[in-house]
Image (cartoon, rainbow, N blue to C red; front, side, top):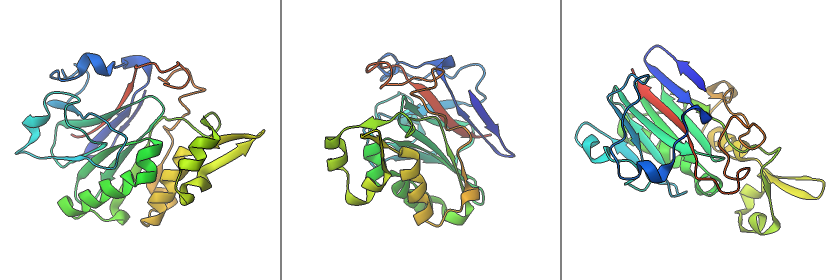
Length: 230
């Protein structure tokens, strides 16, 4: 588990300490663990796309039941509302607008990444809160890294030409660099190296502390990544 607590926000990239089975919590009211100091915990039904939801005072009750609304990012400026994603090789990205005190959480699988999920999340934050790239800190959580994220030729062929730059060759095998793909997207938006914190981003495949869909032959177990305003 990797925790970060700042002046007005907190985030957590979990490991297998608190494993979640999506089928168990689907359409259920997500109970808040005793150790989590929030009033509500929200997860959406992730679809590997580039769309998401804005959590507001007016609509927050619509998201009480887990995994109902399709989407791959959540953003809010409400206090005590934890927004999260569930992953087991995909990249969780937490976004913090340090000026406007707004937050976001992104589920960035390879499909969502090449579809521009980061661009979409930040565009919505800009429209809702006036967020600008220069005021954002992006935190990368655990995901499949290029050391282990082996793909085949068909995978490479279906990638857009630009995304093929993130495919590496090693011993005649292809490996995809999911983190680099999203770092490049943030760089294109004007992010500097100091705005991207990847200290929590360990490889989920070769590090057995984490859930991994690939390592565990399609296991449904997921770890959560959550962020909230204190």
